[in-house]
Image (cartoon, rainbow over all chains, first blue to last red; front, top):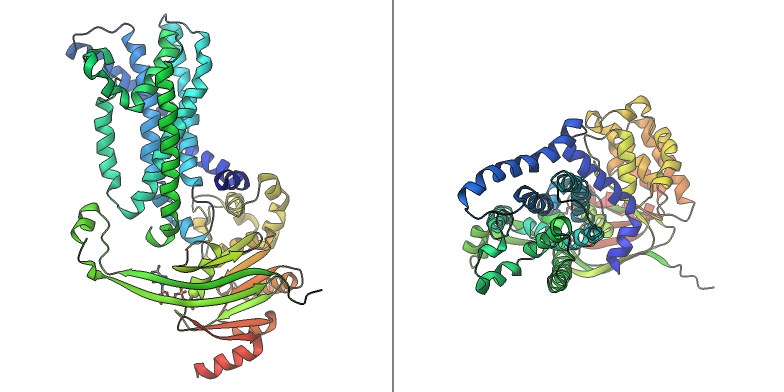
Length: 257
Length: 247
Ligand SMILES: Nc1ncnc2c1ncn2[C@@H]1O[C@H](COP(=O)(O)OP(=O)(O)OP(=O)(O)O)[C@@H](O)[C@H]1O
Ligand SMILES: [Mg+2]
């Protein structure tokens, strides 16, 4: 397959690009590293204080529940937000040299994945010191993270390419992501909704993903099998659809960007 | 043994048209509004049904007046842009030096850019490690190599770009014009190096307006005019004809 061959041949470029993405985020400073942890934590703190007042429902271990929602969500949104603009941001080199263009969105998604796995340390710390503890179910973590990676990459393939031709894709998607935040049980529990319409919530793959993360971190359960199969299907379909769109559009990048 | 050597680049019935937008509709709303009234788009045919075969080991020059499509043809060969019709096949690893810049990151140092640039050409870290000293030596940038490239002059930029491109051991080398910004000493050095490469089995395609250097360096020249190949043959012959018309 062309994709695998390109990635192998250009592995050095991929590596240095991922490094650049990560280094760029931290700006090389210790404070930068700290920030990427502090940011989701502050978010969590605000929600943890405010939300229980608004909603009367009590969730056990709400703080940990929240963190396991926010951190994967941050992984999802940072990759989408940065991935969407990555082709446009690299216009300079796209116009001057050939390299497999898919390296760009893949680098963003990979650096997001690395970042996420580091952030999981926060979740682990909260689980340990929050009295929830850890269990062997954590072996599912890499699998779920990789499914999320593939799913997000598929979306980013499509969006980064479309964004070159339709410039306000960026704004549209920023809006959609904001809406999606509330359509995903991050702050609240899915059981809040009557059983009859709850399935709608579960059409959203992010619901399935965060559910799976909560199962392994918080509830010490094997992820739900049906949900898992659905996730894999959606991820694979989105990945190939995204790649297909990217392949269709990439030939015009140098002229349109 | 067949006398026909295998080709390195094959340009097969290639047509390239550019869309000229006078008022580019880029947002969704504008695209919807302009859906029917496509009046603002004009097509310009830059290359019209070009057929060309460049054999392995040849050193070929592209000549033509400004705007005749030489750079466009090189970009097509590099796969930065794609033909409107027809196809281009290249055999072997290809490196290109198009105008200035060559894909550097301005905030990276010269040394970091060597790694970055060479990895864009598909080299691995250990391969670059082996070559980095040669590249720096060839560029003669001395201690500037550890300064960010945004502080470089255009000649220094070109020195670095050329040094990387020439040292990555590609089988096909495409060079557009950039030699012109080097000082006399470095230009001579580049041509010397190209001369050396010419006698290896490398394929070189060069665009240049310094016709005297082309006469010395190239066996074959291709003259592009009005989107067609006006003449293709022995470099001196083609250049003589070209000069005649330029008068
Ligand atoms: N992205 C583009 N969009 C529209 N027109 C373009 C684009 N790129 C090139 N052209 C047009 O294509 C023609 C050929 O351009 P090209 O850069 O290939 O010329 P050239 O032979 O390299 O000229 P020079 O000797 O000045 O470098 C020009 O008329 C130019 O206006
Ligand atoms: Mg040109």
